[in-house]
Image 1 (tube, rainbow, N blue to C red):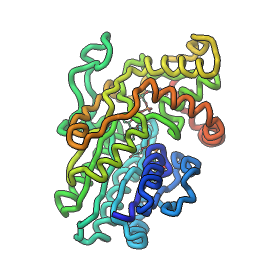
Image 2: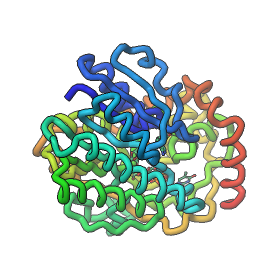
Image 3: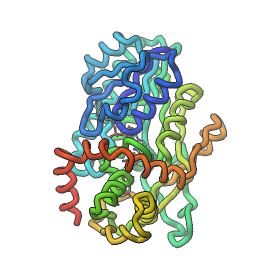
Image 4: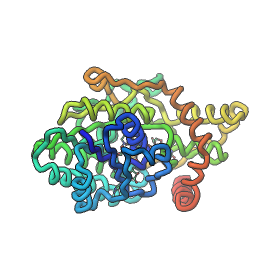
Length: 361
Ligand code: NAD
Ligand code: DAU
């Protein structure tokens, strides 16, 4: 494959995937297609923006005619589809936008690829990036003991049971991708990954939001009692997994991606406080008072835990970073890149965040 379309490449995970592919595969033309919604930011790609094998196109995946034209214009052989509305809290406020982009946008892209490839599947691939949230929520069997907090994990065979408008829209998009494989024979792949963290994540998500609030001495709004469990993976390891699966994955298959790294939210918050205080030279416990328990998220899934044994056994992928190392790296990055953060958190977003916070506290 030579011409690769990456959608959502100006977002958090997409920017890491674009960077990896542009640097690692000079023989590929990488076309980054992104609508630059509030979550898309070309500053995430400053270091590779003038690479000869990189092109950026501002476009909306829901614009079917445009998708058809672009597939042809750039002679696209492979699609790595990350563009989506990605934040659960926003999906609770505005589900229509999620159905539009995640369901209709994915369908529009699938149909444009099908139309352009026209049944000649040789050397073609449509790779769809999805989430562990489609599987629903797991129980906490042993809440008082260290992780794993339960005996059950999400497997590739786990039945879909989404609860939020976000996860419902991602589930629908996954079904469409598989339907294009089963109905038309389109070569597709789907991966379902756990929570990502790392540089360039939009600060509405737990980790960058809390790092920034600790730095600014602002409250840390912990939903409910902070007992929900998430399974965290360093974003560069997700990008590495995408690279491995794109090149070696079995067409038509599904792979779960995760690092067996479960944390209760409240414990993550404590690690973040400790790390930020340490790096800022504050005394231990300096920011503990910022923890503020607020109204829980509606339909808040209790526990996510991915079993990625299949990916390890079949394709040899494993995370490269331990969590402690990844978190310290991440906190350092946000503290060293305050301008990136301040550019995002001023203006429009500040107003959104104030409303969001006031509605919860
Ligand atoms: P993000 O919100 O940071 O980025 C999404 C990108 O998509 C943005 O650049 C945005 O401008 C673009 N976009 C949105 N609507 C678009 C449209 N209609 N047309 C074109 N571009 C559009 O999201 P992320 O966290 O990087 O997630 C990327 C993908 O990975 C999503 O599909 C998400 O469901 C999936 N995922 C995310 C995580 C996670 O922890 N963040 C985990 C597993 C899977
Ligand atoms: O599991 C993969 C998913 O992870 C991705 O598919 C989503 O795109 C991504 O946003 C993420 O979803 P979460 O809802 O798990 O991530 P978020 O960072 O929003 O929240 C993590 C946990 O922290 C969750 O249990 C809610 C809680 N939380 C979050 C915020 C923003 C708080 O307690 N307070 C907060 O202010």
